[in-house]
Length: 210
Image (cartoon, rainbow, N blue to C red; front, top):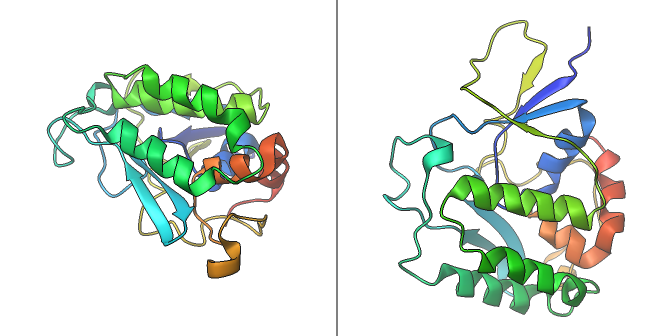
């Protein structure tokens, strides 16, 4: 029997590879009862700018070295990271075809000042789904899911890491804002594809991830 259920982590403006998996399965669960995992995309995303790849990281109360359930991780606003993220996105994508069109809704998400990282991540996933016109259900786990041998669930919670960001997608290519300087950059947030291609970016997700 083919695997029809997928178990994913929650990410901050997930990358294309995350969405590629998301769309391949009939039923998708997003884990909220795991402990926070460092060096993953749970509180960061990557974009490309005039000087290369940039990491946008959401600071957390208690830092990254904590043993707290994902659903209970709180965001720190001690520094104005929201302003920094918006400024970086504007500097990198202002000249792309669709950034100006999507900017108002992007600002609305940041203006909510979410208390919990999980809520922010889910909001960014919903926003991207809306922009891409993807009507796809996802369910939050009600307890930690223990991986089992021979399970009919594909466990992809540990699949997307900072170290494995490069080369994490299939044969995907589109015109990026600084491609003339750096060539095509893979492993970026889906924001990059949306700002460059609009909702037609979803057609690229049919190409399977590696």
